[in-house]
Amino acid sequence: MCGIVGYTGSQNAAPLLLEGLKKLEYRGYDSAGIAVVEGNTIHIRKVTGRIANLCEKTGDGQGIPGTTGIGHTRWATHGAPTDTNAHPHTSNDGRFAVVHNGIIENYVELRRELTQKGYRFESETDTEVIVHLVEMYYGGDFKQAVMKAANRLRGSYALGIVCANEPGRIFVMREASPLIVGLGIGETYFASDVTAMVAYTRNVIYLEDGEFAELTPEGVQVYDCAGREIPKPISRITWDIQAAEKGGYAHFMLKEIMEQPRAAKATLAPRIQSGEVVLENLTLDWGKIQKIMITACGSAYYAGCAGKYTIEKLCRIPVQLELASELRYADPLVDEHTLLIVLSQSGETADTIAAMKECRNRGAQILAIVNVVGSTIAKLADCTLYTWAGPEIAVATTKGYTTQLLVLYLFALYAGKLRGTLKADQYHRLVGELRSLPRRMQLALDMNPRIPKLAKKYHKADSLFFIGRNTDYAVALEGALKMKEISYIHAESYAAGELKHGTIALIHEGQPVVALCCNPAVMEKTLSNIVEVIARGAEVLAVAERGNQTVLSVADDMLYVPRVDTLLSACVEIIPLQLLAYYVAKENGCDIDKPKNLAKSVTVE
Ligand code: AGP
Image 1 (cartoon, protein in one colour):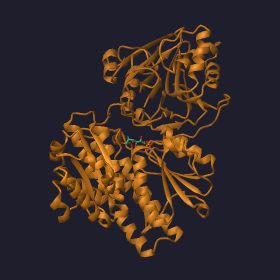
Image 2 (cartoon, helix red, strand yellow; image 1 turned 90 degrees about the vertical axis):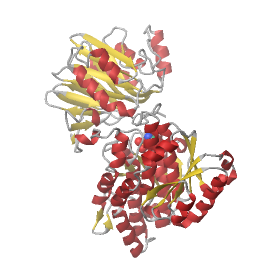
Image 3 (tube, helix red, strand yellow; image 1 turned 30 degrees about the horizontal axis):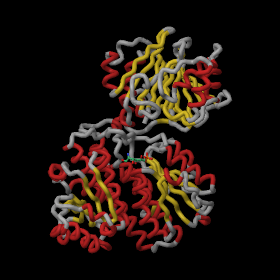
């Protein structure tokens, strides 16, 4: 969703802001803009569409002088994606400019009040109230004006504000939206995501909710909401900058698919020691836990769907799955006997955060499984297990999803042993199997060279069905989502046994059906469903273990996976489906890394 960047130092700000914004493109946006302070003037440039248009309009930023500035990529919420609605927004006197990531929930009443006081609104955005508030409260003290304005805001925001009277000073502020300050030598940065500044500095400060900071070329001063100075630790970004580059691949998504064996090793290696699962900082009150609830959105939710089978089987404890957007309003039956497991790649998903807070208020213990270090969800949880997948740039998650599965498997084995529900020999066999998963994921990548060809056959389909039973069904859910979100082909996942209760009416001559047949316990049943759809004209593309002659004899086409225990197989089974979605989207000429209407980090409700 929206992204913000800022710079103050001795270099020309505009080119740096544009470079930073390019790094945030993956978050999803539909307009962009920058504001640069030069002397006592603020230069504003905004465009609808891509950053490339902004680069063209500003001669890659060279045409705009000034060494302090802020920038923004906007994903439209309040008002259409137009130049006028694009950020930065300026005060009526032209003295202040603001960029904002988040939503101001009380903007209607603030807008009414400010309009009555004579402030003129140019845009339809919620953001514009912020800059008029700052102007209203400004009596010569920039910091006081920012603080007073912030006290009037309700909702979520990460803000950057510049003032023409005070070149070289930027105020930033955070409430329920990520904001990170980067410390250089004689220059200071901020951004909603470290990828925007890691090329310039690795020393960062994570702001917490309710904090604001004053940035100057000399450094940063952080304040609490009452304006008192607070000391903040400096963290070091350790991942390699190339992790956020395409590295020769046509798309980030393909790179991230291919990276999965390596990411899996990073997730597993530190946590399997001398044949035992070791989970750092898992300080839960195990005696209290009577049920587990898993909540998340999108693919993270589907990782939970697969993880449920493994946890229930190995830990013999009921696992309930809830979509975070539903759970937050569900008046859930959660108490101190509930362990809530929250899954999120970004750690910033608004619905997931809200669901988490709802369950926290009811007494649940919370374990977060998150990729982005220092993110809101990681901080809110009682315990956090990082997935260590490295930065994931493509909007469609791949390594984020598979590493979430791996952490769920680790958790299931760890908890199963601890609870005494898992026999020693089964535990050791599964730990061994878990350790072999990076290699098997690599095999799943290698054994499907025909996928680009299959994509040529299936890319014209109007719709695709993904069917499976049990763990295969959980993978079908994610397979269908991958197909929809990047190829724009309607795809529906169905529990194979449910087809005959209605949906089979949609099967017609030539209808492609992707059938997952990897779970031996239910394979015969799935085969019966395959035969039923074939009898109605469907073309079946089956996913099965290589060498499975029975499936081969009925399917039209095959995707192969290596043999893996069913309880751990989802992270391998999904790989050919990720590749299929990728190549189908490529055939259809889709914008694979930045699919239309989607954002990487969904920070609004
Ligand atoms: C998956 O490809 C999507 N981009 C989306 O469903 C995503 O998984 C969901 O929005 C949750 O995001 P999170 O993991 O960052 O919380």
